[in-house]
Image (tube, rainbow, N blue to C red; front, side, top):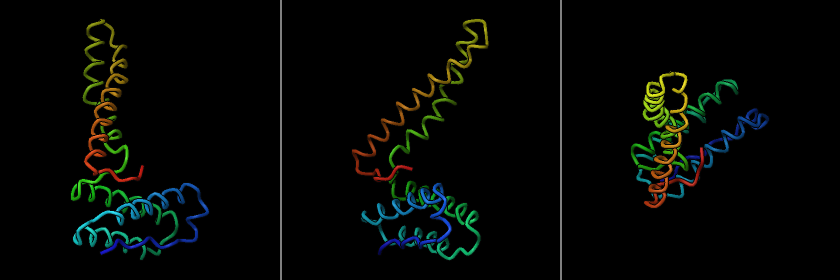
Length: 152
């Protein structure tokens, strides 16, 4: 079974930002079609695309629906098929590193120095830790063949 194509929408191509989002979603669909995916997940993805193709609202609402559909498809593909786009884990772990590692390290620096103005030092350290962990997970996903050739 093949994943449905996204239909052209006339007003979307005139706006560069919207055209880019549409192009990314089409690339995601093409990349998923290039893989062997069971019929169950394909049917679920086709439901999202069919709802998007049937949408008749204005262009701004359409783009909101497109963004939501893309994120739902990506979450579904990540959970069910364990496939992720390039840089997926790096993006997730950047934020986690800042929150989980950076804030406590910054607080420790601030307390140790006796000046809480040093709390900001921990954020870039946490960001670096998060990027390193996420990049490692991205590399592992690529080595296992679970990485889609799409960057979101």
